Length: 187
Image 1 (tube, rainbow, N blue to C red):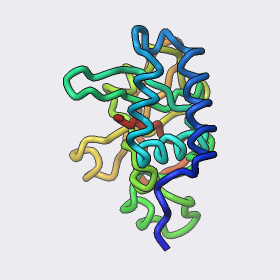
Image 2 (image 1 turned 90 degrees about the horizontal axis):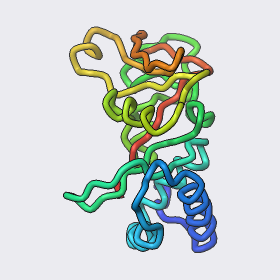
Image 3 (image 1 turned 90 degrees about the vertical axis):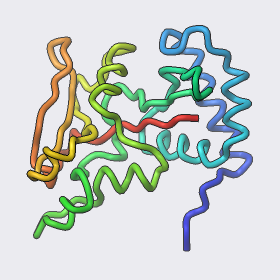
């Protein structure tokens, strides 16, 4: 049975309250934006609210980090201080998961992101996130990997150490208890 991608009225009210509190607590991430306009847009997009709920319940703490005037879209990133707990220990993609003979992780990043209705951050987006706060100081997050690297069996991840953002590589089939992924959603 396909999963319904719409929240109940109660879930919607609860999520909007959480998002508004986070929005107000972290004004520096989105100066000059008006919550009432954000809320109105969210209420017109129930599937996007569902995706934000998926980000929230998996530990991502989504918040607005940018607004695109050209497309009139608010850009949400997972803003949890560490990589979201509910998405850790995943390998990079389905191909990597299928290639594992034993000790398979529960899921893979690309499938989980698609199921949530989000994309994983690119390196550029990850670096932008780090410009609005300090994230992944103890954990790491998979990022979109260029095709050329992925075809050779690798995948990229980032973290922040020594007040610097680092980009690293691993085999795409690897997974770690301290690595998840951060999502981006445009509303």
